[in-house]
Length: 544
Image (cartoon, rainbow, N blue to C red; front, side):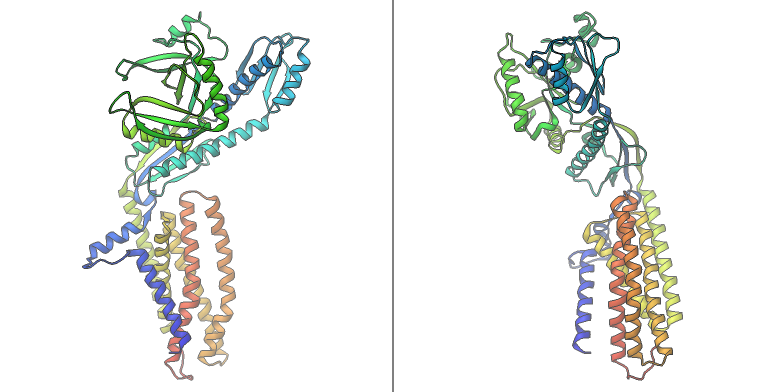
């Protein structure tokens, strides 16, 4: 055996060793068959359709994000007209995309229109129907569309970070084709995803709002009655929990808050759990704000602390008041959320806030659990299909190509070993469509070997010596094999980039299988031919 051929087999041996390590890990002695099966099961990650788990479809309430943007615009416009001495009547939100301004003084109407055109470019202005000197501001359709898209992107990224932070195995989180505001979440192996669902459902919509009325009310009707049945403009009723002297929540109460928040969860820069110094055994969540949020938060808290009696600030999480503390002094860039938190619940809330606040709340449209027995049936059916197709192909190759068919069988088996091993090393998830990709890889491997062998047969029929025929056969078939594989790889790459869940599983197995097939059908098969010919006389016949 010449040195070049020796190095080829050394490389093949290295690849085989890497594959065995990827499939089984480092060996332990003594090693039983049960241990080998356990290692193999641990290394290969299975998708939801094979392993079982939970399937959720979430709907992001994108209109809430649009409405919040409208509330912030109302608050900003109110402050701007006051600072510029523009005389107006009522400024109120009509719906999620419209703001109405009543009774703009004719002497300052020009300044008002200039303010809208310069400071509120996201809005169009038109006279309000039936209102003297009134204006109706409408959020531009392009802004609404951009806000809807940004809300979905942020929601998808936030939910992904939250699920990944929980350490769940290879989850699938992606938009689903059922609607432009729906997200698919698949959690393989999680038959009881209660904690994951709780973290997802905890929308993490943290806002800090001024308490417009100093006292909470026992019911929403009582809050309305205290205001004569009509809430003051720009306010909203939000439920919360009253606290007894011990600090434990006792009953639901209702607060009247400013609709527009001072800061939102998007202004958060960090959150962490910590023991509650006032209540031993309880925990609290401390958070930090961005610099831009601190410039708003500092003056607000300073103004509240100078009131008599001192003003209150509500910490609102997911449309519920966690606490409404009295503001005693100026606070610039940090705060505390207190409640009946255990260590785990405080960690989960901090995780939600750190991962990013959802721009809108979510609603569950579908929730179902896939049992592992169904996945086991799929695995058995898929393995049978793969083994059955491999056996039929092996029999055909050996009968039709004789000893050269054995060469092809060795290349096919190594192809499958490389495919499964590199999926295990890369942490790729094997799905039921992925098993279909394995079967397709077997077919592509047979196709490559048939191309090479038929080329070699053609060269032998033309009277060339076996060594020359093998060299010409591989050389001429190489370009065809590369062309077919590259076109299939491009298609698989698009499936991987734009597909979701099982489609990506199919693409991953197909890509790895195609790359492995090029190595085995060209490099390994050629090395076996060269080794066989090196042991024969130059004029010996080639069994093909």
